[in-house]
Amino acid sequence: MEIPARAGGKSEKSGGGKLKWWQLSLIGVGCTIGTGYFLGSGIGISKTGPSIVISFILAGITAMIVSEQLGKMFIQDPQKGSFRSYTKKAFGRWAGFSSGWVYWFSEMLISGSQLTALSILTRFWFPNIPIWILASIYATLGIIVVLIGTKGFERTENLFAVMKVAAIFMFIILAILVLFGFFGGNRDDFDIPNTANEFFAEGMIGLWSSLIFGFYAFGGIEIMGILSVRLQQKTEVIKSTTVMLIILTSIYIISIILASGLVAYDEFNAEESPFVISLAEYNLAFFPYVFNAGVIIAGFSTMAASLFAVTSMLVTMSEEGDAPKVFSKKSKLKVPPFALALTISVLVISIVVSRIVPDRVYEYITTAAGLMLIYNWFFILISFPKLIKATKFDHVKRFLAMLLILLAVSGTLVDKANRMGFFVSVIFIVLVIVVILFMRKGKKKNKNELPRGI
Image (tube, rainbow, N blue to C red):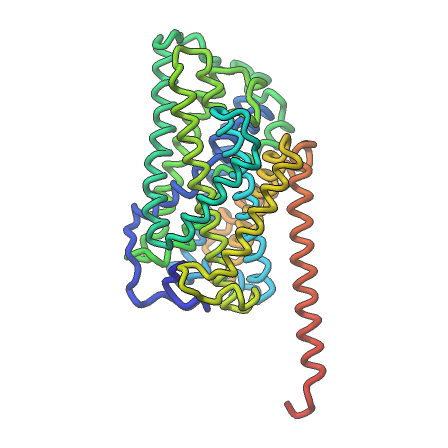
């Protein structure tokens, strides 16, 4: 992987940035829109009905606040380690260590969930091929994308971003045409909730449990921080992320409203895209095939972005002493081989898990991955006032975002299916805490063993 500056967290002052702000926005769209939206949103709709729109609005607001505060820290002090470096500066090494490893694990979970989702979707054409074989094929292709390096990754994600947005717009246009009487549709097919009970189909508990799926659809904004060092004008990072999030939130909400209005909420599931389900009854025989291909591209690009991010983060942590030095050891490859080997090993574990428990694994991993991501959003929010002179309005936004994050996390406990993902995330955080305690104990022991006078 081509690291643009020394991974010790030094500012990039060499003028090596090559991205314009709109290019970073496009990469952000490419890295964010994935199966968390195309497939996971169906799970969210099934839990709360039309009110899933509120989950996406609240998640979008939170993502905008988090990205703005991360952007302000970056403008003041550009760091290649992004949020991890700021957390470390704000609270010390333990915070940078835990933030980095929580992010690493969350992105690996995302890669695992994408592998499972891609395999489920591909069985639309090849129903007899086992999930684990399809997952192995996608994992291999994802590693190839990582191996092509930073520049190749950026070009690939730009292309994928255009294809994903095109797929969403195709759905929106077709759904609107259906409502105007095309393809055997009718305006009366669109069900507008007339009462609170219809809008909140499963009550406030349903809305609460669906929040995590709204947040998960915005998972990926963190890579904007990692790639911000490549901007030509560092001060344009907030404009770049804001434009990206406005575009994302708008198309998410419009498409979700159309999908949830065309079909009863209890017809959505984790096996099919809600957008395919919502147009299944109309004379659009080509749509499932074309859209399914678009969803697969979306999922694959998000998985590739996750693999790129975790490998890059692992190298940076290794160079800063928060991971074994072997992971930053260079070779003829564009990616340090041992960092790549660890990434591949975890992908293999994901494939094995998908073979053992294929029925609910996507929902479990999606919940856990979403939780791990927003734990790091919380880190960003608490680091901000330590490093930046925050205004009263900054604090208001910060506390609002933290409250929404806590609601999303606690919402996973009220739903039986989500609860497993919550416990997976807690287990890993406990593991990180145990490692930190051992590190501190070892450091204290080494100090006590030093000869007097040293």
